[in-house]
Length: 438
Image (cartoon, rainbow, N blue to C red; front, side, top):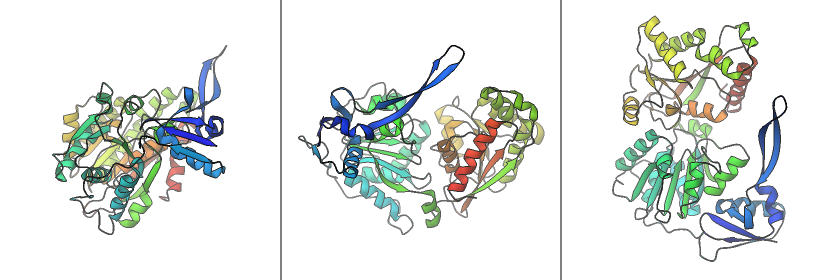
């Protein structure tokens, strides 16, 4: 028998059956410890069950599903009604066309949120996550809302959509997670909305600090990608809840609300001297950041693609962005706009609004997410990388449709010069095949 008591929207207590539920709340971790000659990798197993049987309330759904699979009786006690739905103050309203045949999924997803009140919406970039958030707020016009993001661009775009929807008078606090972590009134909010909720989900993160100190009963996260099974996914579920709604890129392209990615891959010249390097930092600097063949190809591809619309070139390091811009200027007499973390929020927002025509913008991670430029003709992945989340974020920048646009070019580059670069390209290639883009 498993027995759990809900204490508040954040914490619950396992009164009976702690050892029974431990397998579904455990994860494998790894740490590197210095050995005699080198660092040695060690694995360990940890659990989300804290001292006294405390667990994050969002994990109750996982425990219930586990108990049903194992045919174990379970009882969840909620003496103070912490899990009871908070009644909407009005019907779901929207100035956006969420009831049209191609957009009806938006009302379906918002309805799921109103019914379940905590969890994660996994929806592909460009499917209208901001519209979903605003439509949710319209159903709780008299409630107090906290909107969290880790980028200023997302904040400004959300505020614009809120005004466009005629909800400028709602009681809402729009903050970056960095600002919120410096102090919030814990019991003031009824609803907390987290944008790009897959990021920063760790017990030492700012999101953990903020969300474990908020009494808001309605907790909703939005993301296009989930962390892999393990610690970060458990923390995400614990703080917000499980996935309660999903809308994929494939569904979006079939409905005509997303542009279809057209992957174009290019092979770079092989430089065997790169194989003499063993540190990834050296390989990345020479094989990517300072690779003139790559940078020249990126520039010429961008110039070609810009004939059809604005182009976004994604890099990781500032030096790489500067190299690409310098080559465009020196060899082709073309000025590319460069955006990095050092670019202030107001300037970034202005650059976003001015991405029209044949504009080419080179950007670090600040434009990898929360960038809404529907007219993008192509996204150029100049930085490579092996992360599936980062690759999907990059592709997501170009998925939004606009007048006359039903596909977007995604450019990627294969450098055969070193096993690190070959491995990373292979991981991206697997993603493209799995999603049916090749």
